[in-house]
Length: 73
Image 1 (tube, rainbow, N blue to C red):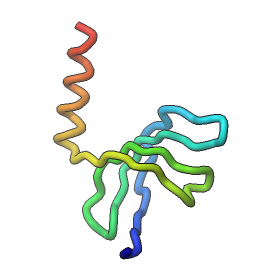
Image 2: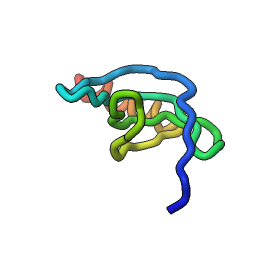
Image 3: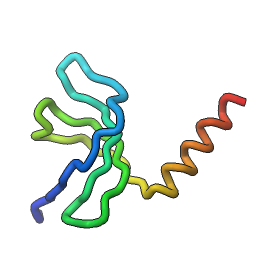
Image 4: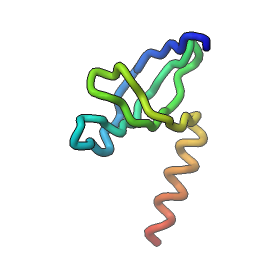
């Protein structure tokens, strides 16, 4: 399996933290040197391991934001 390279450009929010220290975070991440995308996933303490997640472009994130805001209406 090819090595996965990532750079967390900005941590936007920590959504939750488990008793074992894993944190669900929304970050701006560059994967394998590509243009950064918004990324929501669980990270182990020290970020040495990660869970499965979802990456979104800015447009996708804004559509999701709009959808979530309309849920409360």
